[in-house]
Length: 290
Image (cartoon, rainbow, N blue to C red; front, side, top):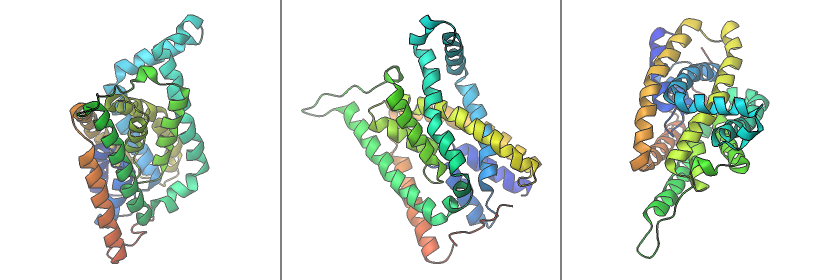
């Protein structure tokens, strides 16, 4: 991998990680369209450490508060009813599905799941799901002529059952094209949570999963499967761009619809199907990692 490739891929990772459009799919497609080797699942996992570092800094106050309350609840029974202490447990519970499936499906994640036809399918299907979830949320918020607006749930109402459902939604993002934020936010909206609550828990839930995945994949870099220099460079690029995207996205979702992302996903999926069907792109274009 050249330094220019790592710069472009780091930029793509930072731009797409927190938007509901799938960073892993865009890394895969960028390489395919440019005629580069697929950067591979290991490169994706490691550069995600950079974007998760941006999450740690952006949500640092929330994280410190949650970790502190959760730690104290281990020895102080009176703290176990504290919302922040409970959030610590809920993040752990919600991380179980992706942890189990990430290890179980490792070979599929690094192979068959990166087929461009599967990516096109998940882009379209999850785009439709996000669109439905967004419209339901908008209907509840706006109400209607004969219907009062419906109050949606906040994170204070999050329990173990919903936490596990969020976690299962996040695990779907092991398939490129699904999108971690897209799946978890869609799940949250369908369960009746506010946009802000669904997005905030989505970002917090991703921290242990992404950091664990990145550390796990570091062994591939050590074995020569990933170039150290370009990968670290891309990780720093992803961090800087990712932080800016988080700040923008958290403001965007408070007043705007997810429909622009829905339309983008569907159009990109259709275009990808056309290009593969016409033979312009092979379903396995650039599949061997460089």
